[in-house]
Image 1 (cartoon, helix red, strand yellow):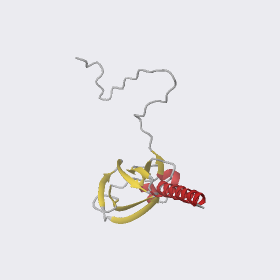
Image 2 (tube, helix red, strand yellow):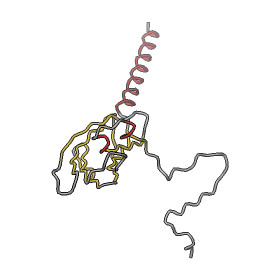
Image 3 (cartoon, helix red, strand yellow):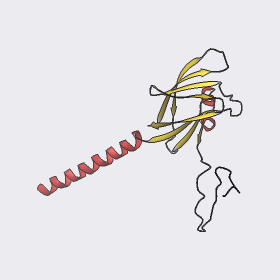
Image 4 (tube, helix red, strand yellow):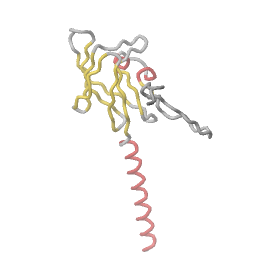
Length: 154
C-alpha cells in the first residue's frame, strides 16, 4: 500500500511537471520582432508610422526604417498611427499578428500586412550579415574592417 502510494505520487508529480513545462513552452515563447516600414514590391511604405506595444511608445518610423520589439507569446498586438503623406490625416489602427512558432527573429513588414499581402510577404526571418560562417573544419582568419579604415594603421 505504501509503495503503491509512493509510486502514484511520483507519477503524478512527473505529469504535473511535464504539463507545466509544455504550458511554459507554448505561452512563454519569446520572439524578437523587427518592424519594417519599407517598400516591398507593390506595397508602398507610409510617410510615418507611430508604433505602440502594450501601451508603450516603441518608435516613429519614417520610410525605409526598422525598429525592434520583444514579444512574449504567439501574438503581437500593435497600436499604429499611420501617416500616408505629409499633411494628410492620420489613421489609427490596432493590428494583431500571429507569429510563427519556428522563427526566433521575425521581420514584420507593416505596410504589406495592412494591404492584405500573404504571410510569406509580410513575415520573413531576420538574417544578420554579421553571423559567423558555418564551421567547415578549417580555421579561417577573417578580418572584417567594420569602420573602413584599411591602410590607416599608425
